[in-house]
Length: 138
Figure 1: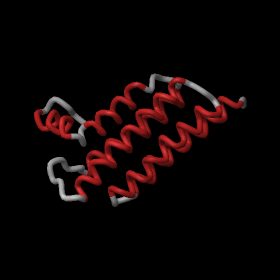
Figure 2: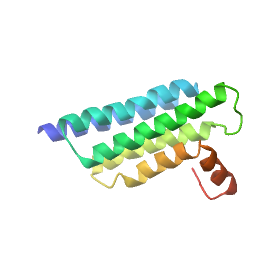
Figure 3: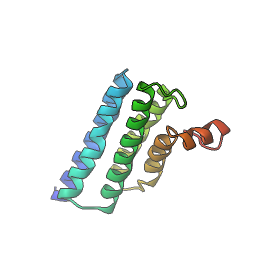
Figure 4: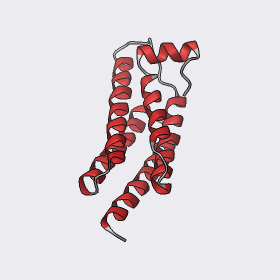
């Protein structure tokens, strides 16, 4: 196994683990904390075995973490305008697993990353509005 294959396999293994542990967790903040490992492992991977796909994954995963974390903080501070439901995290877990599948089968990572980005966007005011209108589906 060459270096690139090794790091790709490590990324796949860690993304699968993240999806599993997120599913077992009940607390939304803890789920988000566990999700944060996804962009961490993507960043480590492109540092040792660069790929634009790893870079794109890290960017989307980090952006999603930040957006969802912002919404959680707003909720905690008393802003009830946009809720985060269990469905958000269920879809997020599934998308992380799909991202691992895409890396494993060397298929396009675009669909799982688009899903992750849409989930994160749905926690914003504009995204939630589009979700409520039926224009954005998780």
